[in-house]
Image 1 (cartoon, rainbow, N blue to C red):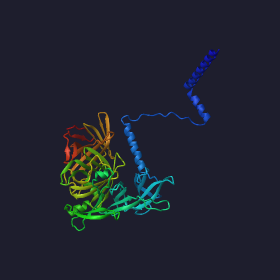
Image 2 (cartoon, rainbow, N blue to C red):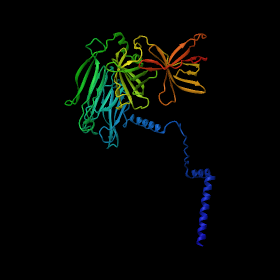
Image 3 (cartoon, rainbow, N blue to C red):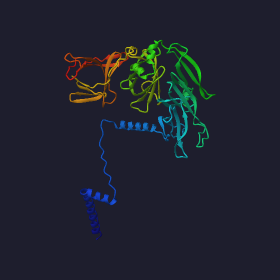
Image 4 (cartoon, rainbow, N blue to C red):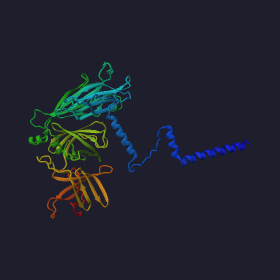
Length: 519
């Protein structure tokens, strides 16, 4: 009897299970809609995941997303600023070794006319349970686009020094250094000492550079203190009739005064150049000097010997700076330029690593050479070179910057050409399309001048890396044409230390509205 009962129960459970499975399989919508009516809430729909481009690396996407989030976080203030205050630069790191990040923020007050750049210190307040502004101080910088903010062990004692550089309204370079205090900071009532003490404040009509020296192995291992760095300021020698003669003022740290003091003055003779030409270049208009430096420059050693492994290309039409060295290339967006007494100050940002900002102080050394001093917000060893500072000479002819009339080239066209390579279409917004053998190649383009030559750069889109094609351009008026249209001949070239170098490929002839052969 027990066996029959057990068999009946097993059969009943099996039948009930089959019934439930059948209902779920044949009438799922009716069941779930009824459950929605009973619960009063819509059911969650299954999320459909659509595969993305298979050619994109998941690791690359994750790295890019992480870098983008880190950059966004680093640009945000952890405590609210007051009304009318706008952020210029943000520095986020652990200043006091408590494993909690603090912030130094450079900001500007838009309400105040001619407001200087201020800095504020933000740290976590345990009592308030959040971040709080506890200290503010003005700087002598007034031009927000020139601000560079970073930290460095300036004194060699492993203390944190905050360094903020930039330019003021007089076109002078400025440097302010602040040392983190070890004494207790101010409390809510204002008792205690300020979190930072000013140890240097320098401004000059030339440039300012921190002269870093190699420190001992004992310092590297944390066994001893290191030598404090000196600060060099370069300005005009007012006692000399030559406009390019400079003086170097060296500042050293005085521990007794806890401040950087002037220690030495050195006169630096400059190249004798005709005053009129110097005034034309250094007339306070950054666009004139930009046209002078436009093009390729190669590094020259102290003895004038060229280094063919290191270049800087100032791409004025595309507003880019391209650094090449050690068989690697870095491209920076040309953000803005500001005039200085001896040249311009350029602020730039890496196109791939947006947190990496690079500032260049470019000075006229002669009519075919410039002197460059580079500073970066991120204090890292770069793959291009250990140091980009030094003198650079213009590749190719040196007469490009001497003429009062600069060769004018229209960077963009609204035209189409036909040839053996296919149909090449330029639009006025700087984009091109090449139709060839049933395929379409799209990208950006720009016509530009180098010395007395006109060049064309094509940059195809959708290609990993920075694929660039440079062509020497010549225009011809066809005999059958009325003169309103021109044919175009392109010769593939390479830009090098010797200027324009052909790669010995066949010339490409293009005709407007017609066909042409590849010669």
